[in-house]
Structure formats: C-alpha cells, structure tokens
Image (spheres, helix red, strand yellow):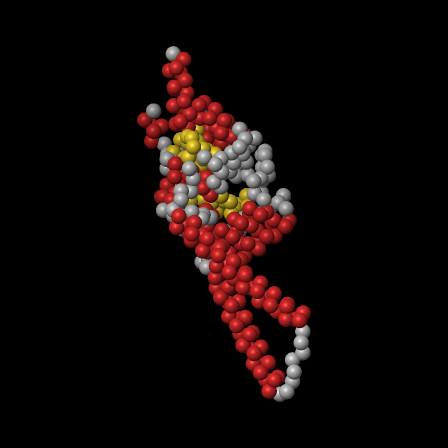
Length: 329
C-alpha cells in the first residue's frame, strides 16, 4: 500500500455536455488505458456542463461504483471553457489531462504523452490534428483562414489543428489558473503561459456517439473570442479605416475646389452620392462594432462574476446515499 501511495497521480478532466451516449464508451476506454499504466494512479474528473440528458445520472452511478471517478455538475450550461477551468481548479493530480468524452481525443496516447514528460523533460504535451479528413470543407477552409489571421495579428502563435487534448504538469496548471479571466480561450492561454511543450499529431477521429455541440456560428463566435482576447489589431484596423476615409474626404474637397475654380461644374448624381454615404456609414458602423466588442468584454470582466456555479459533486452524492442508508437502518 505504501508503494501505491508514492505513485504519481494523473487527473483526467473530461468536460461533458449532453454526452450520455458517449460517456460509457469513454469510461470503458480510459479504464482500459489506466490498467495498462500500472505505474500511475488515476483520477477521472468529469465536469457536467449543465447537461439536459442523462449524463449526470450516469456520472452518479460511476462515482458510486468507482472511487476514482469524481464529478462537478454546473447549475446550468456555462460553456466548455468554464468546464475546463473548473476541471483544472478541482484537479488534485501531479499531472492533469484535458480530453473530450467523445473519444476524438484518444486515451491510448496518454502513455506516450506521460513518457514525454517524465523521460524527455517536457512540462506539457499537446496534440493537434494532422489532417481534417471527415470535416466539412467550408469549416476546414474557415479554420485554416482563422489560424492564418490570428497568427499574423497576435504575438501568441496558435498551432493550426490544435486540440484541447493536453497533458501537463501541476505547475503548468497552476500557471493557467493564475489567469482567471472571464472571456477565455484556453488554447491561446496554454500557448501564452509557455513552458516546454511537445506536440503530437494524429489523424482526425470521428465521434464515438452523439452529435457535435459546435455549430458553425458557435465556432465563429469562439474565434472572435480568441481574436479579442489575444490581439488589439482590430482596433488598429478601425483607426486605419478612419484615417483613410478622412484622407479620401480631404482629397475630394481639394478636387471639388479646383474644379470650381476652373469653372467646371460638378455633375449631380444621387446614386453615386448614396453609394458613398452607405460605404462611409458601413465603415463607421464596422469600426463602432469593433470598439463595442472590446468594451463589452471589458464590461463583463469588470463585473467579476464567477465562471461557473456548482450544483453538485460526487461528495454530495455520497452524503445522499449515506443518509438513505441511515434512514433505512
């Protein structure tokens, strides 16, 4: 027993949102991998992000039958970023892994990832997709475009195809938790904190069960979160548009004055005037929208609201079961 206590602990953080169909497959696979990694103790920390299906009920059963299983259930859906933060905040292991419940992040990579940290001197091991095979063409195109844009306007370089599947030392986790910002983009935060990182590539894997929760619109909003969180370039773009329009206006005034002095009358043209007005108005609204986005993020940060609220954990479930047993006795 003493030797077992000395083994390092690996906490596997698993964000779940309506993953009732996928969790049983994930649990079977992660326990199989844990059995192979006999030199490591495991803790499976599921974060229920306000699921409306039977995810929480299944997690209760797992926690009751397997002491390695823990869970944190939110009072409502707060989003994956909040779920990952809650997982890191509640993880107790020497090493912490973040992975999805749909098996698109293969648990079979964990032995290789842990070996890289223990034997090769890395602080963390991150994963990325080598291909986007099986993904819609339009989504792949916009994803590649997003990485090209963000890497040009941000000082923090994002790795194309990066997944949330990461294994890290406790000190990397502690560094990430020192950034309790409300508007989060964990991939960017992970790159920002630095440390020695090894990247592992693997082919795109389809979900084992269930449906993806990421629509095109949600991915678009998520990309905007990243750009606003790690770059102020859009503000510079707004200033550039404003400067260029002022320059065009000055040139236009000079041209009109010269034509009037030369006795050349300007032809009246309502269509062209309206087009110019619409163009200038559109640019102004675009710039105001950029400013509004940054101001809204600042407003949300200034409120200081928590990223999530916990409704239940495995400890509450244990207390309920004990109360029932005492009542029956």
